[in-house]
Amino acid sequence: MKRTWWKEGIVYQIYPRSFMDSNGDGIGDLRGIETKADYIASLGVDIVWLNPVYSSPNRDNGYDISDYEAIMEEFGTMADLESLIEVLHRRGIRVVMDLVVNHTSDLHPWFRESRSSKDSPKRDWYIWKPAKAGGPPNNWKSCFTGSAWERDSRTGDYYLHLFDPGQPDLNWENPELRRAVYAMMRRWFARGIDGFRMDVVTLFSKDPSYRDLMPGEGMFSGTAPYVYGPRLHEFIREMRREALSGFDVMTVGEAPGSTVENALELVGEDRGELDMLFQFELMGIDHVDGDKWRQRPIDLVEMKRIIERWQLGLAGRAWNSNYLMNHDQPRSVSRFGDDGCFRTESAKALLLLNLSLGGTPYIYQGEELGMANAAFDSISDYRDVDTLNYYKEARAAGVAEDEVMRSISYMSRDNARRPMQWSAGRNAGFGSGLPWIGVNPDYMTVNAEAEEADPSSVLNFVRSMTRFRKEHKVLVYGSFELLAHDDPKLFAFLREGEGERLFVEVNMSGDVAKAAMPSSGMTPLISNLGSSANTAADRLEPWEARISALHRVSSPV
Image (tube, rainbow, N blue to C red; front, side, top):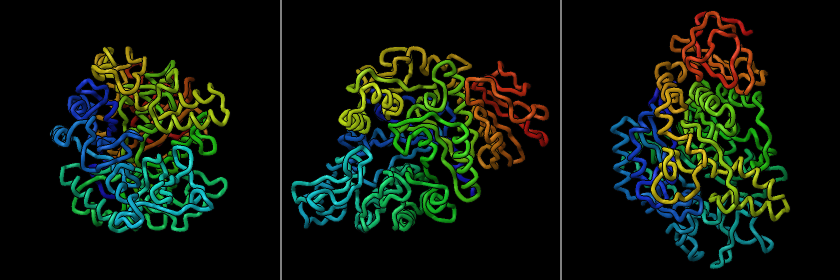
């Protein structure tokens, strides 16, 4: 497989609204990010992915875009963005932006013209259907609850919105629309950005039959009539040809409904489509029947099998994207780790795991500090449209208040969107004004300033681990072999290649775990417990994670 900067790089994801507020209005902004450029560089990351900074009425925190080539006033100006790109580039950090072109805001000029009349030149830039039996055209549901169709009083027709009603879906069947999108992408590359993370890319093509969802067919199941639609690959190949060719850029698609098999058709190196994708199989591990608001305990054996399936399934044919959280998911230390007794140890262990897998690793802001979930006392404190809609629907259906709030406290997207914890000062050092969403009360002890001064902190371990990954290319390009498949505590695997053989083992529990191999013939290289680790022992302490060089073939214990 070809070697590229985006395979060898480490990505740091920034949610601008919650990263750093430079002007005291309570909202993070582009200048705020620029003031933290040295901090970002110190993490050892090579790529920054910015969540949307475009003009938006913020029905869905920037994923409802009203102008693709203007900056949200709360975030600053185009000059501020250009300055940030230059500052990061000077530090050797590339910049990837969000591309949200499955839908726009209903305030986008394209949609305003589209809805103006049935004869509008842009009518077909969106998906309009007449009523069926006096109601919506079919039974499709919005990701944010309710029908995916909204009746427009101007013409009586319904428009499709797979997300919020303020996010009408674009009609990718229209070639003029596609040309407008590609031209916009090229203009962004001309401004110096280094790639796009493409929002819900697998939803671009819809089944032209617009059939009903069948019983048991979930919102993002692989068979849904708007997931991996019949023209998806044609559209993405056209995008590659018309918008991406001639630029040395990175593309990663958010890809609901993906399996190893259909992912290979989208990101296989021989396909000429996308470079990587985000699969959701791991993110659904604690959902009941695909419903994220009904949760079950995480089964480590199942987690290992999912990761193994993707590591082996794409090996030599496509490239993985590895992440344990992002702006749409709970905090990883609260979900996959232990944010109580073993918060520091488990936060480090999870980072070591993610940075040891084959593929490009993604770190979300605050993950490098071990930031955790934090439940709000009242639903009025939440800001996420998905959370608020679920609360309203669940309570109307008679679900008890404490049950609804318990589910929200675990799964709400707002867990990842609380302000970055920079210090123990006012508002966690995020800014002088009251933040747009409440700060996690634990900021007095969990913050970047405190962790800078602590050699054993999560922050300083991340820096050691990113250096380690860069020094050992086997972690980028090597083979993957899972060990201890059925062990309910231990995640252990071998990475081999580049003249090295590394043994990675992570105790994913609060109990002592038996090692998967005898320690003889190994040289300990890095551990999340540092000098306190008993690396010669054939056991691992609670949440201990370590990597060793394997000098000879050892038999599993």
